[in-house]
Image 1 (cartoon, rainbow, N blue to C red):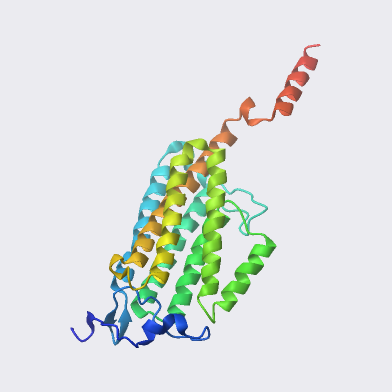
Image 2: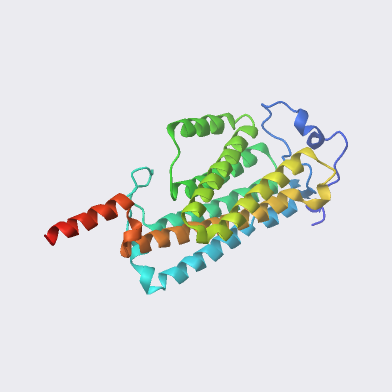
Length: 282
């Protein structure tokens, strides 16, 4: 057993130490030399990365339990399952419940791909791991909005170039982090009572980006902090509160449709209604 799972001591001139100097066309290399690596099934593995990948499974499980509680509430049981029409969406007839399920279920793909990548540490598995993150981010984007044609072109080009180097899908991931963060701010302006959840989402987002950058540029000085694993945990929290925020916004919009008031109309619409009522009394 010791032959298959033991601490792997990095050699000074090993491929992992020269990762940043390798050609962009290199297809196989150890992705993250900053984390403690282990020999595992005649290869190298990042144990902390493997274990913390399951943080996304915990997020999925908690989110599903949250949806179950909502479905047990008589007020929302029917409206949350009714299809909603969205002209700007690639899936225009999904119900609010299906949208949140899609966001949560996309995390299961992240769990599988992240676990495989950190258990193998090769470029192909890294590329698949990045694609799983992108599909999860797009699930959150589609929950409320959609990308423009220019943004879709950018995503397609970077994913294609990702066959040669991981920096290109990484650029898409960073951009979608920005996109989701900006939309979160808009939702918090529309619903100020959700401000606290918005703060958690933005904070964990920024924290994950910062530790990811530190992990890459300050290797090996900060190896003992296991920064990539901290990014996993931070992003799992980010995804959970993102799903909660998405669900609460959809429930609030359901309430607005069920209970229309004069406050839901513009000032001109209110004046027009008053004028029409006055004409009826003449």
